Length: 204
Image (cartoon, rainbow, N blue to C red; front, side):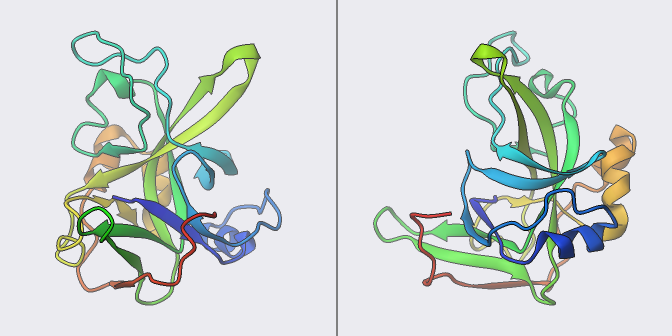
């Protein structure tokens, strides 16, 4: 969808892959990144830390009604059309992978999803800035999702839009039509999916 992310490799490695400066410095390994927490993001200005989840203060839907729920994931089919997303920026969330769950409450199974070749996964994302009380500005990000491929479909009805490294600049700086053309399921057979029984879900 994604449900939660994990990123354990050094940020310097991510910076080299994306051909940008490591402006964040050493970061702790993150094995359980949850909505509401900070995640590393690449924008047109470089690497930044942003809050995962857009608080849509002042945003309205097509009927002119306020959007109330925090936007953690945005559907690619509507992200360029809905008034609730007007004026958002674009970004990339580089991670080692993500988690999903199947099953009923109290009997859920956690699944870890990553690239078979061990490379980072680059999630397409949108950004916004929330002006909190007291003048505090909080940079926020939400992952963009699409229909799942055959690998992910047995686990979840959506998956994040994953980008090739060569398409990063096109997503960040291309036209809406160019960005929309990248919002498609990841090719089948390139993801490793395994049960995640070894994760401490209480921490980050």
